Image 1 (cartoon, rainbow, N blue to C red):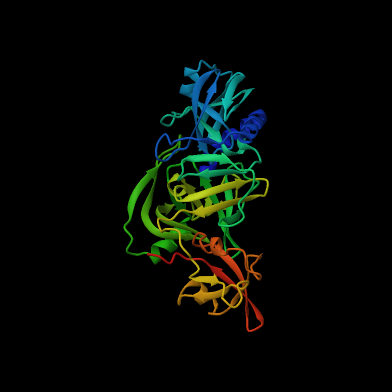
Image 2: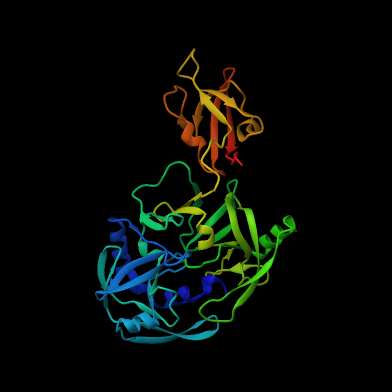
Length: 390
């Protein structure tokens, strides 16, 4: 069983059509007031709301495609189970209920709709799960280090890596790339406390490159089925294509079989990012532009990660001339002292005036396309920024 075959997608197939009204509710709400919530624990993002004027708390879960209540909170709220159908989840017969129409207030808006009831124990301080698809097409920002999620009216231009969003999946998947080439699908699961889990193949590759890494065992269990046991290690750095993780626990995807992890849609995926790894990322999800944007959070302070500066001269203040340090990304890419900056990522610097420094301060892994003039000849260089401070 994969995470994508867990309780969420199984129930979504059964009752997904009832959530159109709730989607409109959340979409309208996100167009208004941003909401910042503290974690209920270190590994959870919680949204506060009410049902029939009684307070409820929802776990924000990018692994869920819909919003639902658990059995005990539904009972506490006095909500009868009007529908009770049995479905197969991981080989088990599981009854899934449905509330009568309720007045729900969430993210500043209200609606009257039905909610599914999942017959599983409630996570600590949570009455239900809030699915990311409920947020509609407006881009939203998951700032796990800052303990908040909020809407965006526009996407940032610089300083973020961009990944194709899997528009066909009901759960949050994006395509990891390496130098523009696909590495495979990555599952984002803010409802899980794990950090980084990779395919058996990637796990074995990492083990071979890190033979001295300490290994322990851990378990993971869904709401149904037996606990799964898998190896666990600690990675100071792990690169998933062009996406860099620092200081994360890492292990194989526990539900993978025959060397592969297969989602409910029948497609393979190569990694799962849980809250343990999201704490080291900022993430923006934009269904309108079909992309996921990420920004790595590093304990290394902000600094010039190119190893070069572009300064004007007393002879011509309109020109920006290269000064660089040996063995830095600028030097290794082929830039030379005295080159005249023309453009960075299409932004024109040929007449001076603008400040190029914000480009150079972007996170490690950011790619820059530099255009310079050398002895009246134009040269173009592709550079990847790196952390240069200890």
